[in-house]
Length: 137
Image (cartoon, rainbow, N blue to C red; front, side, top):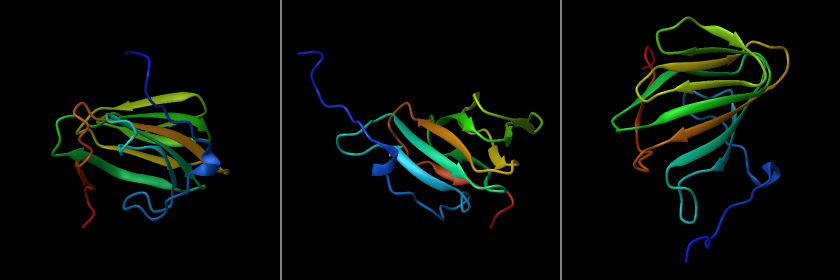
């Protein structure tokens, strides 16, 4: 019967922050939703808390068919680069979309902590992509 099943309701206080992820070392990651048993299959939802100067280093994802990102700047001042365009400084209530295999980066250029909601989407539920950081060995 349609309309039945189980959803997920989480408060931020229920999610332990993850620190030290490669390329995101200065960012506190709160993985709100991720592919797992009983969870979503096609997306991840992460809140990135970035201290002043904190950054997500330039990188792209490869070796998977689809792995798009959408970002929503909840607060703060972010320098963002998505693809071949110029870097742009944006603020609260800005949406950024970065399709698969396109280089992207974010950096907090403000004086206070910034919070960015990150959605990763995979057309086949495959999140085992390779992440490439150009210039990093």
